[in-house]
Image (cartoon, rainbow, N blue to C red; front, top):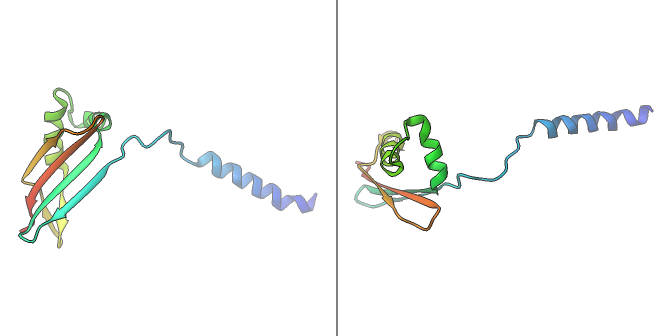
Length: 112
């Protein structure tokens, strides 16, 4: 019986680990970010993700009404880059049509 005690402890610890592990059905968001800097200090930032996920995420920010208009405003207000320790916000945000069900928001700005 004593020889099985370490195995029993290991089994109980394994059950505790499995019971505390988060469970997830699938990766709904699937965000892809592309950031391109030009020599003149300008940048283009593309954020692409599932449009349904984005619409769902906008609800806490008053995301009711035209989802595209609300999304543009929320993206413009919430996206901040830090370049050389300085805060840089995009000057413009546009929605790009793409293959369903993804949405792409393109942000342009300057780092200087």
